[in-house]
Image (cartoon, rainbow, N blue to C red; front, top):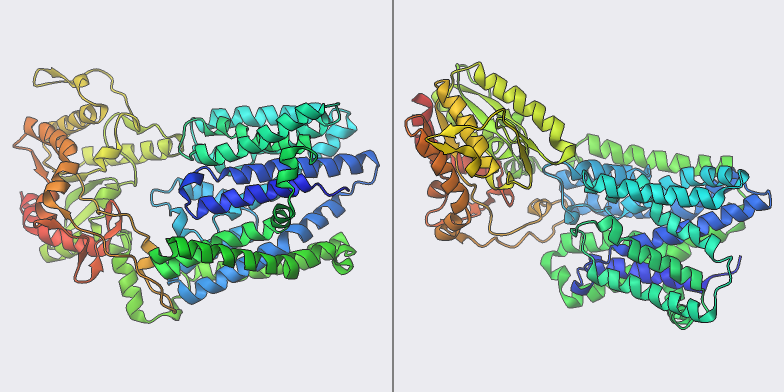
Length: 636
């Protein structure tokens, strides 16, 4: 088939804006749209090839999948191997554990599903902690290749190819719009909600058969390129109705393909340099993010300077060119590989993928091969991790109090274990990360809604069956009216005021405290959390076999600043506490943690797991300071 230089130019444009986005070049905050352009190109080319071969009665599913395997897998496997090996040299066990998991899912073409599921975890890693994050799009595209040929062949045989593709495109777009109101990350990561982007490319095939004048082609081409560039500059990942906004770059890419390479804009993006860049775009896409990831991980903030960004970009190009000529191209063009049967191709690639997946999965199961580092590193890793149920040391003694709330109360588990051992008592934890334990309150987020309702109901039922004192903490500012739903059977009247005059959170807390107090329980409300004065990359706190740059010190906040940040929530808690001053106490963390500065480190150890949670070391530190107050409350 004729080489389409404007499509190579589109690939160059797409990969360039993705790279600029990941390099954090400010003007390209919407550079993620480059992936959507790739989807449009794939939809056009794959559908064109299938329809042509089907029309000539020469289409073979076996040959199609064999070609796709030769096109995609060699460079992907090479990228995964290098990413894994570099991680084994520089990453601590906790990070290698996660890198190995990413490698496994990338090899098995389910990375997008993994990232979707993990996006709903309360402690979901951010992009700077994911070495193969960009593989989500490749996994999605491979899933598209699995079913699209079957769909196209059946539609073509029924004589309804254009109608079928149009229907699939419209249905996918409608599904994306509907599901986005409940689960944005599903729309971003999962294949069904991206079909409309592939469909935009496929539908070009039926429009280009019509006669289009040269002036119209010029407008389409110029408008299409402009739409992509403007989208890369103007769009943001957190904007509302993003799935609809993504139609702009998708239609822009479709228009550019439809216009061809004879227009002014088509010739511009068909320059030999852009065509060359488009030719290596797949290898460049695969290698660019691991290079950026490890540059930032190993060299720290120095990797984000202008000079470093230039060096990183040069490294990407060198690696991409090498990958193209030494890994990617031979499997596409060499007669040795092109003549392999589907059976031999599947057996060869399947064996390599499964062997690699076995290695990466065993690394994941082993916890990142802790034997690579001395035993002292294991203890340091524990101190810098988030407290877990393993930190609850059983004590021979009665259950003396209940620990109730979300992850902001779970963070005290490690420190309380030491206090409980001194007092000879046990505790019972009734908590769920990001789950409000309040009567009538549920999350609006559908993905966590039902799970949190069950956790809430079980916790409240257990509290109702005991008369133990309750230590109660939540991430108060998160549960604002935009995040929670509040349902009560009737309005509560407290001290002559209608509870409905306050926010949903305050109304729900008043109702919950009234029920606790009416049942004779004592409650210790823990106020607004002292947050770290910076964001930081947690994996960089731990060294691997080879050294890397540690995160820079986090500047300490003043006590006045910390008080100001929590003043609204602490005031709300104080209003509730004042209604039952003999049964409810309010403990403000700012009064104990800051003296007068709020430090993020103590004795060389970070005290935070992330910006809003203490780690194990921070839990020990804070509970030691709270010990007299907690002891007095528990003993009554």
